[in-house]
Image (cartoon, rainbow, N blue to C red):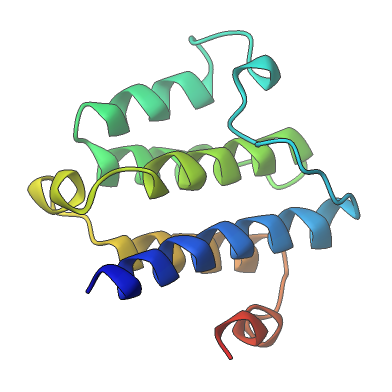
Length: 127
């Protein structure tokens, strides 16, 4: 079970990096969730992280997708940082708040679709 959890966590991280690379063309090793990228906790990132940290992960994810502006590349980074952040939660925390680790992968796939990335490209990571 631990191997499967580690695999899903690594896969989520790689999908996040792939989405960012395909959209921006940049291969950046810096963590997208790095606090230096977000100076105001009053913005979208701060709000969705606070919600998720308080166990309202589904609400945070819904807010993210409702507010997502595909024309603003910074919002892509916010979305990726959100998924990287919740990917660090323990399975116990996720389960307590009705969220499965596989939903992180599903959310990243939905994000990719929003930005026009084919599911075929993402499926390359699962083989």
